[in-house]
Image 1 (cartoon, helix red, strand yellow):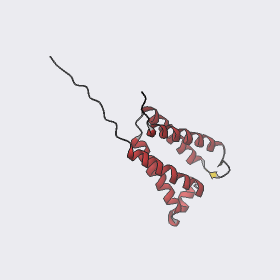
Image 2 (spheres, rainbow, N blue to C red):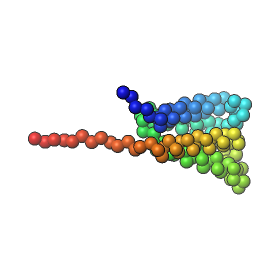
Image 3 (cartoon, rainbow, N blue to C red):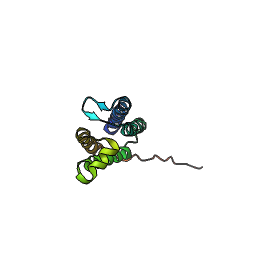
Image 4 (cartoon, rainbow, N blue to C red):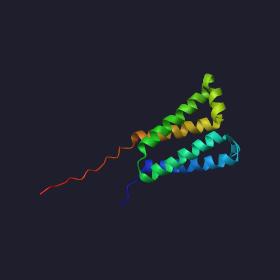
Amino acid sequence: MKTKKPGRRFTLLIGILLLAEGVWGLFSNNIFGAISINTRLSIIHIVVGIAGLYYGSTGNTRKYNILLGASLLLLAILHFIPLTAGIIKGLFDLNDLLAYLYIFIGISALYIGLTTRKLRKQRSLLVVF
């Protein structure tokens, strides 16, 4: 019987979405007519998306989700602070809609990452007769 692994499913889904958004962003600066993205952010999304697919396929998703959630929340918060908003806008062309999306994904990733149990390495006992 298969056990449900929401962390694994979430990581694979986010990996697919980030990879698709990153590739789309390489060819267009506007995604869905509302999300602005530059080449730098597209490359970051491709790398993070590939990492999500890798960690989602191996099942070791806890650290990935915690790091992803913290990073996205940090970027979104920095976007809304007036002193750092210009820097974030200049580096990543982050608009309000993408910042809100980062908040949603960041909170979700942190929740899943923090509530997922750590994988324990199973040790085999060597019995010597």
